[in-house]
Length: 372
Image 1 (cartoon, helix red, strand yellow):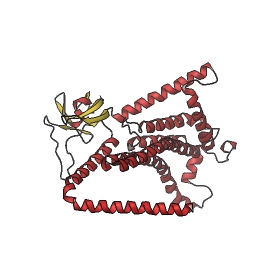
Image 2 (cartoon, one colour):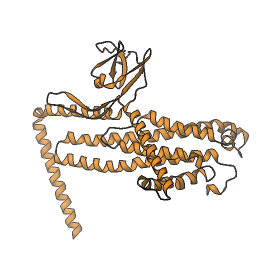
Image 3 (cartoon, one colour):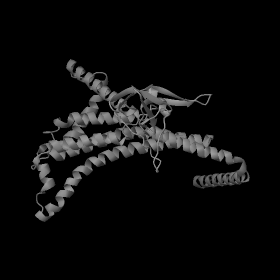
Image 4 (spheres, one colour):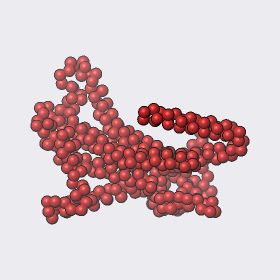
């Protein structure tokens, strides 16, 4: 009886929603000309949201917290400038406030520079940008060694990790039990040692790699958590950063590998010699593919998460009604909670795979108890 009642209720709701949607559709058709300007406004809003998402994902030469448009229609930015360091016939150092978010031309020692699409070009006093037939800027682009937002965040997180573990180490000098921040860090450190390093590398060699594994785990985790804050920090969705992390894993694996590792790559034992010649370049290529998968996995997952989350938030400004905005907000809230899990999960995966590669590099021909 209860199932029949539920089925009738669902049918009535479906009929009501369908009737409402049909009536709304007819009303929109009758007043198409009246709402045309509003539709154009929505298209402009979509483009503005898309542009904001792209801007949010990119690095910048200043640390912007947020921006707004005042009553006079002026675009105001809240944040602080960062040092711009260029090599253009010598070292040119100045504050990014001179560029004024790309709206002004900076004059330094008789040279003029303009920020255009996130890059600094040499120009004239009027800020002229020259283009080729594909509408690409052809102005001279000096070598840029600036302290950008991502670089500033990397330095900040590096100092934070240093002081956290330094304080934890000092607490161990006073007693066997850690205090304060050490109580939170100790279980994570023990987990990385007992469940990641030792099972994948072995008791004989794991200590050589613990410093790197701990550093890369906490670095990626804290950076990913900062990316979920309104600060607009998105370091791991910069492919140059993930490339540097993966390159470190590759270099450590390559320069600490034993002869068994290289023997399995260039002359695989137990395989007929014609197959060894075929498998050697494939195995060698695999040593490059492994770190490449590390950088792509971290970059793609973090970037996709930011794009989806900000797109859902942008839907609230497009719907402009209580139902659509509420659904968008609820979905964005759930996705933000999921991103907290992804932030730790990506740090764990990168650390686990790095330990796995280190283990294969130092694995001995005759397995000992350390691998069990």
